[in-house]
Image (cartoon, rainbow, N blue to C red; front, side, top):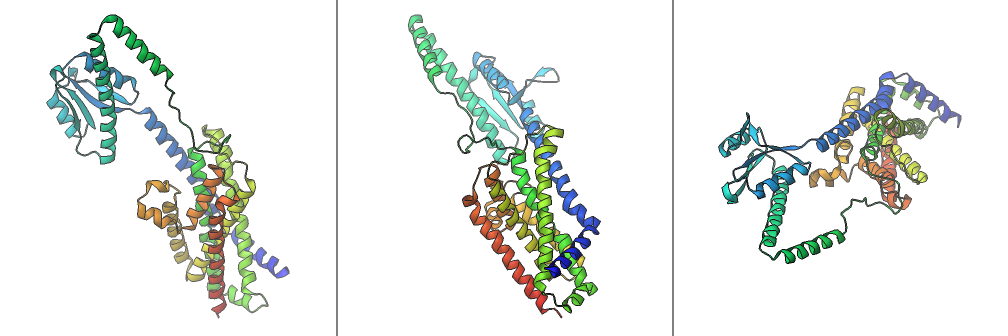
Length: 396
């Protein structure tokens, strides 16, 4: 036990004297999560408040075009451009403006409602174009249906038309409203938000960045000969590596607490965002955190054992963490990525850890739900320890 404590004290002194390493471990993740979350919140707010500008060319001036214009205006989704330089838009003028990329789409109604055309910018992405054209087609068909019903009523006997109109109104009122709900457990207080999705990713991102100070300390010991001198003492390699594991496990737990502080207090209090909700399965949170920390430590040990210089370890380790973070959903949800990337992310320990936290923070998952990923993280750590001990045991 005394040997372990001495080795732990040595690792602690190395860590606290590494000021740049401490900044990478504790300051960088806090700044990253705040900047990325605030940027996403602002982008979401802007997208909700902004309206798509549409050139509206009305050559008909009929009741149908007036109804369609009213429906589009009241939807809150579009801003209709009817004039250019104070004059009503012409079809040729609208085509030129759209072809130049000034507007994404235009809607032209010909005289006497003989045709309705959507004028689309050829530079629009296919998905956005289809979404925009589909929405406008929905509004057009809705206005046409209403005009067809009104024209039908106009041909009927007034008493029959009023009775049929009342019947339609009664049926419409009896139809159930459309509401939006989340697929969470019954009576769950957790609601999905940007913070609920971002905090898990940046917890794992911060943990895996211990690869820089951890591998750096290992390589410095090898290059300066301190590791060789320690090997002359009756101290096993497993004790030396275990002291690093325990110290950086504590570091990962501190990082986890910092991320929770940002999600539950700093962002809500200072920026008015919804607070991170942890759910009620605290034991599952602890197990998920320890498993993720062990996997991050194992990654750092392997990089430190294989690299030959601090610069090599820092470059390789940081690049690998960024790549694993990107494909694992730290900055962008995995379901938005191409299928090959989604498949590749399944072998990433960062993805396993993020999925654990998402299951707990959003789906109120229990230990049984996250057990497969917990097992993968622990096995990753065990194999990393075996590889590291084997490499160090062969060193003279």
